[in-house]
Image (cartoon, rainbow, N blue to C red; front, side):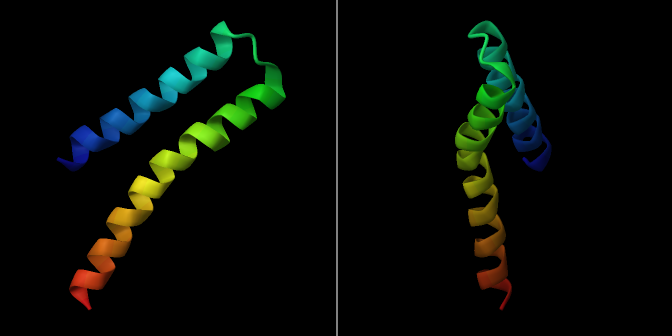
Length: 57
């Protein structure tokens, strides 16, 4: 499961990069895309870490 989720997160990073490339976003646009769209991925990872921490306590 962890391997599949890691692969999915990497693939989502590629999708964000491709979206910025096709829209000719530029350097600042790419940074904004990765920050905003990557925020959902980081929230998902943070939630899993928090749940594991709470269950092991």
